[in-house]
Length: 242
Ligand code: F6R
Image 1 (tube, helix red, strand yellow):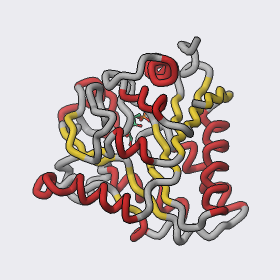
Image 2 (image 1 turned 135 degrees about the vertical axis):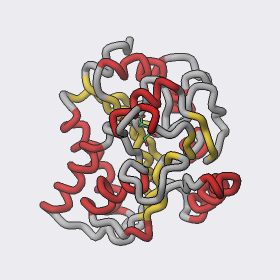
Image 3 (image 1 turned 90 degrees about the vertical axis):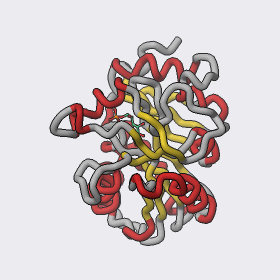
């Protein structure tokens, strides 16, 4: 992986946004893989700002969210469908019908993963996948123990992840226990990965991803199996790298 250490989140966001913009410029119907959580917010806001300053036709851009909670009521403000609409689709002016999010409806879980995987294949695959990483080492919601060949499917969130994500909910008990996530195999098939991480609490996960043994107990180490990965980190997140 190419590791770039930046002064702060804003600088990393500008760099990642430039890569996305270049891609859309070359390929107006590019397929983006969209992470949620706090990490990619600087990317989406830098891209929105860039598009305001210097407009580009993004009406044909397509997108696939990385993951979704299982069992939140439709329209719940913390569902990743709602988050993607609020933080990505609206500020960038993307075409809502072009953006897909895994279906977290408990009634259709058995088929939703394969359906999502097929939708990604039908779109020609993901050109650029934006990734964050959890303290647990998860990418997407592929918690430790996830197969490197996995496709979109239901997973159980670790206690650590539910605690980390409690900040978005009224109480920790409100954080769903299950999720639907792109698999590590799905992520491996994306043509370019941009993994971002900021802050000392991500330092162990970044060191394990970039330099540690390639093992499914460190899901981020999947990046070592990929030919085109860019890691954008601040000093604190880079602090455990050799
Ligand atoms: C989000 C996702 C997760 C987050 C990770 C880090 O779609 O799949 O892997 O990237 O939990 O979350 P933040 O960025 O909130 O620290």
